[in-house]
Length: 317
Image (cartoon, rainbow, N blue to C red; front, top):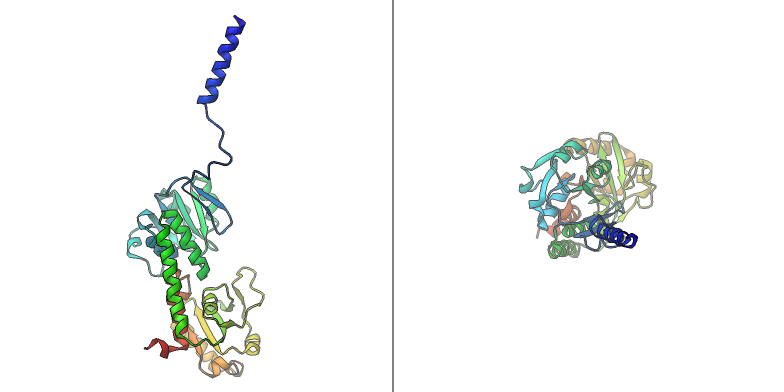
């Protein structure tokens, strides 16, 4: 009798082991996933299946997503003064790009939120605690954009279209570079806001474009600001010593007012007038739609815009 009871109990244990919840596989979950992506915070993000509802916290992600068949997946986006693709205009707003409303994001019921690095990382913990996966991506430099296009193509499952978009952008940029003289120009990039001036380093949008054109940023190697690794403190004394032959100005605010104020300052200052770029009239104000926030897949247009400032005759043909 005891033997029969023992066998019955053993059978029940085996059945329970087979039918009950199994421990999660330690090495198989990501292998069976739809996609495994390393984002720009260095996190490994596992997507168990293709996302069906995506919210983005930067308008810079909208056009790349459209280019890789992701437009139909986007259900929420931020307000933005930059050009917004038609498909996104009627989508739910989740707030201003610098003030994303977490409640509005949650109300969209997304299964993936694409977060802009440097602006919205504070949302990650709140979203993840609500069971929503996040990808933190950086779209600042051109290399960033190419990497993110590849990642977004992974998300949508349109790798071929991502590869083609990257190849097309590379070709357009090379075409611009082929048109201009291969002189190594010495440039300075100054950013103007209502709070004052800063100097842009190679990691900034304009800095990365100048580098692509083969030009030397005279501020390269300067210690960056504590809270902004892509900018350094402005110093007229340093600018005079560096004596750039070209100055590019990026701005936040009303461009006409900034240009008028800076032109007047330069004209009335002997120190400014001693700088070759100022003395020779080679100070250029870059368009805000391409240089204030990331131009995304419009980087080739940003490269041409900067090159056109210096060599307008080449692009008039």
